[in-house]
Image (cartoon, rainbow, N blue to C red; front, side):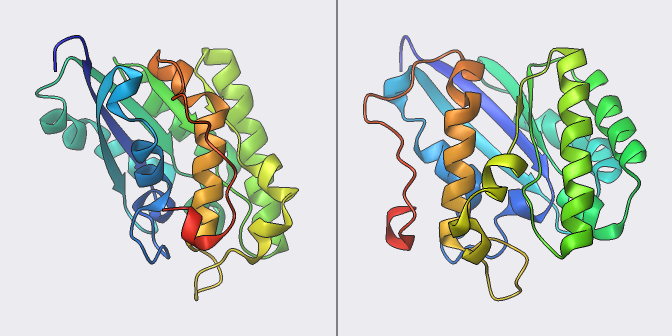
Length: 211
């Protein structure tokens, strides 16, 4: 509609971007998109481009090819990078993951946002994710790229520890709602250059309230 920006956003990452484990198949990307209505001034098209098991090195290599057809139309194009869990699961060295993210960011000619990985897995995996979160936050600060941390906030939430799908690793409906809450309240609207909707985004933990 006239006066609204036609914004296309490609969200790259692993299974957490794909929404694996969510019985409603929305993931956090679908929930964030649902809470970015036309009343904000944008006609948002969000493409969740997550591939299960892919580390950051693999994610950034496919970005140009997958974003090209999706950016063929629209007034404005943006990229969200949200890998990291697969890196930790596969034991990729933090320095290698950081180098991959820096390569991906340097290759972009559109505004970027990075969403950090949440704490999941056993103690060793959580420790690796914590190191990666800190290193990525430092990289984004140096490159002046907005970074939304999920590791610290979710580590302090009891609800997050129990919000698991049957595989014990991926979030369930409630867990993806918590991730969406952090993204929406961690800088999503300012990054898009819009005001938040008049109806506040609440941290709803009941499963039926996260749709």
